[in-house]
Image 1: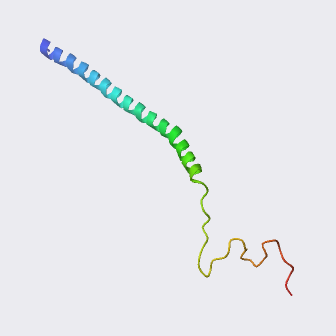
Image 2: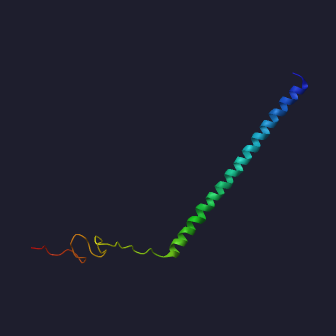
Length: 89
């Protein structure tokens, strides 16, 4: 092997190692960035959703409409809302 081939092999090995380190550093920094975004989303967005939902107030009660709809204050089994009634003869 002559000197030029030896120089070529040494530069090739050096270049591959350098390129591998560059790719590793780029991937590592990108992962850190996305990890930070996930942490921000976990801390602040969940808190913001809680604040917005409590500021919106309670949800309105949805009552069914139509002939088959029962009033929410009366049970459908025939008992009175104040408690069970006496047996019917």
